[in-house]
Amino acid sequence: MATKASRSAARLMMAPAVVLLLGWMLVPLIMTLWFSFRTYLPLRGGDQGWTGFDNYVRFVSSSAFWPAVQTTLIIVVGVLIITVVLGILLAMLLDQPMWGQGIVRILVIAPFFVMPTVSALVWKNMFMDPVNGLFAHLFQFFGAEPVSWLSDAAMPSIIMIVSWQWLPFATLILLTAIQSLDSEQLEAAEMDGAPQLKRFFYIILPHLSRAITIVLLIQTIFLLAIFAEIFVTTGGAFGTRTLSYLIFQRVLESQNVGLGSAGGVYAIILANIVAIFLMRIVGKNLDN
Amino acid sequence: MARAVSSRRKLINTSIAWIIGLLIFFPILWTILTSFKTEAQAIASPPIFLGFDWTLENYAVVMERSNYGRFLWNSIIIAGGSTILGLMIAVPAAWSMAFVPSKRTKDILLWMLSTKMLPAVGVLYPIYLLFIEMGLLDSRAGLVVVLMLINLPIIVWMLYTYFREIPVEILEAARMDGATLKEEVLYILTPMAIPGIASTMLLNFILAWNEAFWTLNLTAVNAAPLTAFIASYSSPEGLFFAKLSAASTMAIAPILILGWFSQKQLVRGLTFGAVK
Figure 1 (cartoon, rainbow over the protein chains, first blue to last red):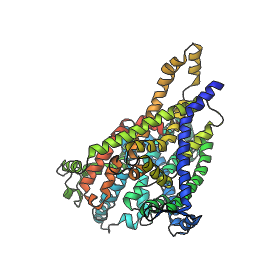
Figure 2: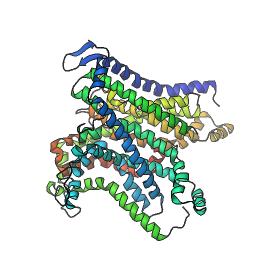
Figure 3: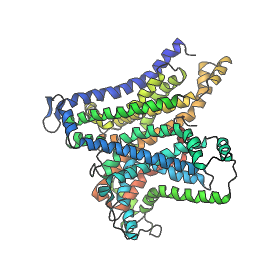
Figure 4: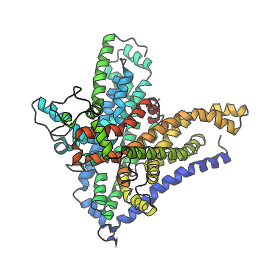
């Protein structure tokens, strides 16, 4: 039982983590807010003073803003759907008795360890290149015209690359959850003549809900910040410019810190809307 | 898994699973194979699978072109340093949250996770300026601190869930038997906490190793890790497939091997203890 002494000791032990994270959150946030109200062009005269809400208005009314928000959400939702659905199927398959299960598992989880920069480069050049890529060879073999994936079908290509990277994570967590399923319950249902689909929707899926929540939470956190895959493949062209990438371009490429900072504030707001939504689900799901 | 399964069913399962497994693994396998080809064979049409003249030439060229050892060393220092520093801060915090919980513990945990939602790009410029001001730009120390901070919420969460699984009854029993605090920590808590700490350490190391946004934007020459090494191949001249493959293989091999050897611990760690 927590005594008064142990409680203050606990506070002391928590202090470094809390203080550091608070600083990590507040210091850059306040600086970003400050810059967002100023005309700040590091290469063209530096800080030129207060502009009020100009940057905010300009950022939202720029033709790139809404498409960027849309792109961000499409990538996040697209990857989530693909990885969760395929992850469930793959986890159920890997749970079946088979020969060489351990090796298959190693093969399946390998993409999780590949750096995003490497996987983006490999996909872009060795698979999606319209001349020498493996897909081009494959299409030619079947007599079809090779596709310039990253320009003609940029979004599906990026979603595919990112899904490949995150499918292992989803599969691994869902597999762990499936393996903890009480097999007697399933057998009893089978004996009672419950058809396969019914068993899936009434027993397996509810059992997985907690694991699915974890997958959604962690992946959303990482997918909202997706950067390397776009940096290396399309550089934001062909409709793949996410909100993060748009801000990156404003701040680093066009060196307009004020405008980029206003965009940063919008990104933080978007992330927080998603966060509140997620935290609700997660908080509820992890409590019991 | 005591269910009897017909060997026909097992054979079907096995073949489907192997085909899918190999498909998922194929991009990695293809990269590794290509790294041993000559450039001409790497782009040959139709593609050559195994019947090529194996060569180490690409590795030699990559080594010559850039100082791989330096990038590797930077990756090790940065990922390792941020992991160790993170654990030093997270272990006491998670420990106290797990064993001396208060009403606000859950709120603090959720708040910590929400800092992970702070879009990196929104705060890049301030961090950049602070780094210039403090002379931390393109330094390993600076990256160690940043990567530690971005992964700290995840480490605290993971450790918290591990520590919560340690049964308090064992502690109480030891106290009844007159164990001192030192004995308690040394002989009871530490052995039970070590597996959790180990898998947290592992995941953090992998995340830090692969992190690209901060490493690409805050390093130039001195502190650049492998993520930057490989990004230098995204220029048009990187279209030499065999050399790109060799560089890619060199960048992912260390972490891939580490990941495979430790997949059991990783699974436990990744699930936040929420899935058992």
